[in-house]
Amino acid sequence: MAIVTAVKCINQACSLSEGMLAMMETFRQMVNDCLRIGLENNASTLKRLSKLCYPALAKYDIISYYKLNAISKAAGILSNRKQSIKRGYPTRTPYMKRALLISSYGFKVENGVLQVPLGDRRYFDILLNSYVKCILSDAAVIVRSFTLAANNTVSIVYSKEVTEIGCNTTAGVDRNLANVAYGNHDRVVMFDVSQAVRVAENTRSITRSFRRNDVRIRKMVTDKYGRRRRNRVSQLLHKVSKAIVQDAKERKAAIVFEDITFIRKLYQKGNYQGREYRGRMNSWSFFELKRQVEYKAAWEGVKVITLTKSKTRGTSQLCPRCGKRVQEAERDNPFYRRQLWCQDCRKWMDRDVVAAMNIARRGADVFQRPEGLAGEAMVQELGSVTPVILKVDASKLTLSCEPIS
Image (tube, rainbow, N blue to C red; front, side):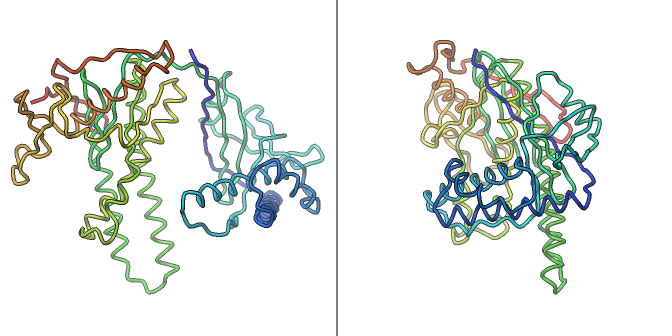
């Protein structure tokens, strides 16, 4: 079994002194100096940037821990900028506006207290809450770094060594605007996430009702409701992603995703679509679910596979049983809405269930390749047995069983 390093991050509120705020401002200035030097010398690697920037940071009265982390932070920003330019995306001149403090050296976590080094063997103590102490009390957990932000929050990055579980099957995830289908030919779970759509629509309705003739005030209020929407949607998707990872761990299944990053281009202005429709589709948080599943699956040792666009083409157009092309119901047919008809099987099937089953089957082909590891090989037959469909209310995680029609 392969052993991998899983990384997580945990946040909490904290109170910062004037001295810590001044140190955070110094760190911001050091990062900006490193960015300027890196742009002048076309340097983006950590090694070259360290040689160029470290002598220039001697004027700052701060311990060397933070100088090294400032150079590392700038190297990461410049490297991302370079990758964006290669891909053809326009970029701005990088500049850090907000004060923060990052360090992966010299700090301590003892007796529920994070000790931030100040120099001369002095520390600034941050009392951790009970939840953070419970997480970090695990003997297998290693604290890697911390980040102090100007909004009085501290983020602690920690990791542990995880043994990947042996996968016996695959389970596909089909992401849709109002639901998430997860499963394979044996069983499919339908998570209802329509509440996320309602939250986004309510947020748009509220922000459009603003009549204050002050751009600054409108931006502040819009940011407030935007954070509220993001938090509510993230919490809803957290329940779904947690249920998916736990089920995959119990069934020893690899989670399979399809690549739908191109979908934003389908709902751009000028595509002959209504404003309301474009706004509803562009508010779809499809990547957030994948992000949550990936880091939670890595923590539990569950393998995650992302298929390319070519490998997942036609997942909602082919029958998962016979492989023949299926037909969609007429648009004005309310009974068979989002249903597909297979002429050979003589059955109606939900298109989201069909997509999840096809994604799982194509994900199994990744393990059956000759270049794969011997322990990863598996055989997965087409679904000859009618799968059980489980309906789940994602907001409450209440589950009901419903056989396929």
